[in-house]
Image (cartoon, rainbow, N blue to C red):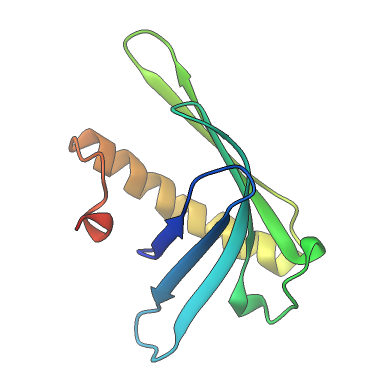
Length: 121
């Protein structure tokens, strides 16, 4: 998520935290969520509350992100679904974000990097 540090136990029901510093800003952003579904090498679904929204961290203010991997022999298909937007503004922000994030994911995979540089020890 834009270079954020992501921490979780990666178990059903476990918390996820996203910590990032936005470019040209002093504040550190701390978003959080919950693992809703997980199946190794196939599926990850989690809720995410965004601190920037300035809304209370409540279920109705969390979006839901689902990553699915489909093995097709020589290739793997990644699908990303982002649902449950609390406003049109949130949808527009996320739509803009994914345009860049999916390109970054594609470039990392084409370079053979399984772990993004900002997550390596």
